[in-house]
Image (cartoon, rainbow, N blue to C red; front, side, top):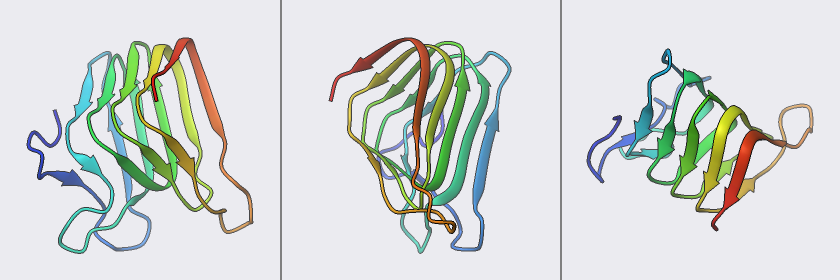
Length: 129
């Protein structure tokens, strides 16, 4: 579990190209904290990736200034809203189930003027928005 309290957040350090890559071999990942735009001058990650996970759960809203890429074999659940800026794409592959309880917003374009994509590959997709 990352960020076990409501006041916790995951964010960048306001420097160039903040990236977060989480790797697990068949384990679960649960992120209870807000992701992006925390306190104390932090900013959103430019890239957020989860590799080789089983179940993945985001308990709160998520903001990324680029791509969100998840490779998981189990259930991927978002309890909050997803906002991807600067032409970021949402890519989820290999999941048995994807559950979206909040909205998904793609904002802006990347440096080349391209807009983001949503690519969801799972056995089942539940939209509970």
